[in-house]
Image (cartoon, rainbow, N blue to C red):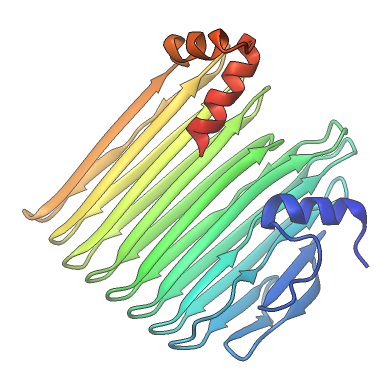
Length: 307
């Protein structure tokens, strides 16, 4: 039976408090798998050579959502997990992951998740990953996800990464390779405060004719926190890609945004744009005329910006 802390973390990172009534799932706590279910379309097995799982979605399956959350409730835990996800040809599936850390001690708690996705021809994947930290302790809450995506012909992948709050340090690394006609959509949304740090290093290789990618990053940096974004799109064939990075900076925070594009084919069309700025004064004034104080108006603007 799971305690209130685990249930609260699961709700924050995967929108579940109890065992899902249908669909496959794997729940990991403090470095160990504690609950699991496979279905006829989704098989989840434990790796034999290192910590982690293999997930196999059957070809042409129309699978229910697969939940693979990780929670850490003990101070001083350092958990590294290797998950390989195989999406069969023509399959359609949503995978909900994420990690929540509750640290009430003085030692750092850390989760490093290495996820590799192999998306078959014509398959469609929606992947949602949320990061969240809480606890009254002084120990850091550290999350370092690594994501590798291999997309076969005409496949589609939508990835949403959200850092809710309470994460002291995160370093996000991603690499994707797109075959002919493959389409990748990535959305990052995060907010940092205090002395927190968030970094994102991303490389998208568009290798096949007609492949495309859209990368959108939205962030808010408060207090003395810092953020660094380094997304790269490389066109190696006739393709299209768009990178957009927008950040709101407040207080004494620091933000660096370094979008990079490269074309190795004359018919590669790649665009990037980046903007960093403070909250718009006109928006603040308008909300304050409706009776809100400055801090309330700021919260509403930030909430809308990060949606």
